Length: 307
Image (cartoon, rainbow, N blue to C red; front, side):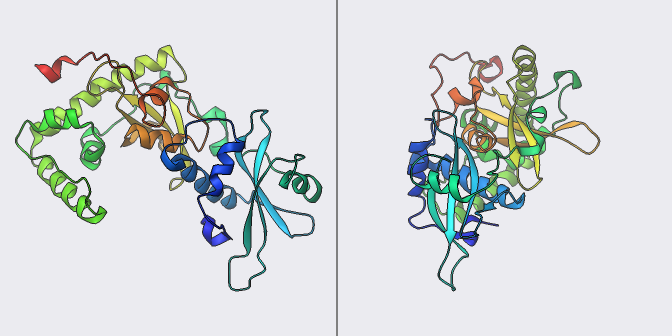
């Protein structure tokens, strides 16, 4: 169920500013874009898992937002019964921390057994990539074709080499933009030499990524895929130079128990998806995304881009 089917939330997303003020400080993106996505998806998941609890008299309900204040105390979203019969069943009241002033007092006095934070996909035991299981099977050709808009522009320009005109879609309506990119995808699909110049850097980048995983077990970052109802892992891809990650690949364990690549994402998309499970701490994601700190200016160019 969507948040707005469940409750009337006045002036949304303005209430998220209050949530950001209450929670530990972190980058939420322009206009709280990441927080908005986080809150909406967190609600959908706690509703699906029946982790929204009602007060003793049924006049209120609440769920654990998964965020905490500086003292690591959980922040809850609180709703009251909607008195209007022609509207949603619930009305959003605000955020509170059990035992503190305001809605925290209501949470303390009117509720029993408030839930802990939701653990996606069974918890932390599923959030690590077992490097000893080898390289994930990746159909780079298909993933590149399906995600041309997410490939770094420098690599795309290098691969095309003037044979095709890169789409210029800034300011376009979404439908028109997608149509142009679909035509570009069809054109690229008919030129194997362009595809090979896209897939080869992906293969080389994955080799480097596996080396990263050996050195630092935190390299893989978990994300929640609501459509598949599963935890997937995000791995960094340094596609245009050795020391600057500029994309991510999502991998999953298939029914045969083997790891496989399923998608290519921009770093902003990766950060946004990963934040639902936990605040990302992997250096490649925090420093590489526009949401966090930007990467250093020094560049170490791959030979194949200048050959």
